[in-house]
Length: 301
Image 1 (tube, rainbow, N blue to C red):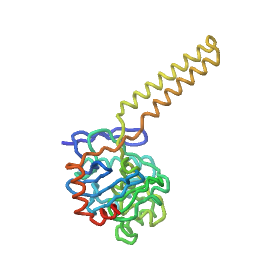
Image 2: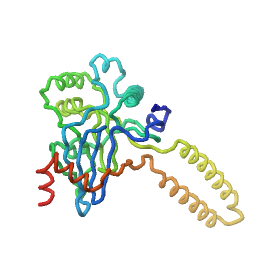
Image 3: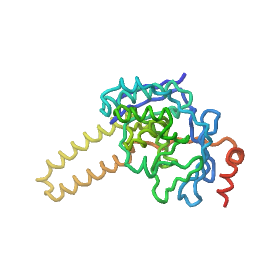
Image 4: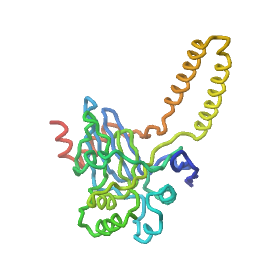
């Protein structure tokens, strides 16, 4: 039985996932830059990295299902005040609970972080992938946007209209993104109608990002290293009269550089895990030919 334990993390909510070795929504890869996204037994996305790593071609099949239940209007209005730290925290806990119960999400064993993020405007504007079902994520031009796994609904769709009202009332719940390092961007997990509503109203939607995190013990070790660093600096300063001020400053500078390098080597978010495609290249080619023959033919041009 899988289980998700929650803890307070820096700037968000930490998740410790156990009992889930294989996620229901997972990235699979084969040689030659071939990748796919599978949700349970359904093929959701095919991907092929450009031969010179200039970007990645993607094709979506239309079989993606959000792992979160539909959000009701009364639920959105109960979470207040909108945009506050407490508001984000309540939604993070709610999303984490739904992801724990879901059979179609990306969680697998390990440490995760779920936190609000204010994205640069281009992420949900120019770098939002609106081409569907085929698209190209242009790394050469610096793509770092959002990739929907289904087509975004029209602004006049019934559910989008309901969310547009919530957007005007400033109670629109956040969208949920999954940070996927293999795309160098984000995958839209939940909030298709909410995103469409925000764009139609000309506002930036609130965002919660799910990413693989680090062991919280590493953070505790870093705090201990920081305390030791301060103690060493104090000892160096005490030796100023013995060594001379120039020598003491050089020693302090060296200690600070080493500590800064140690901090830089500890990224807050880890690489997205991928599993090998069973059957490798042959399986990828067969599935691509079955569901996206025209897309495959275009890649060979």
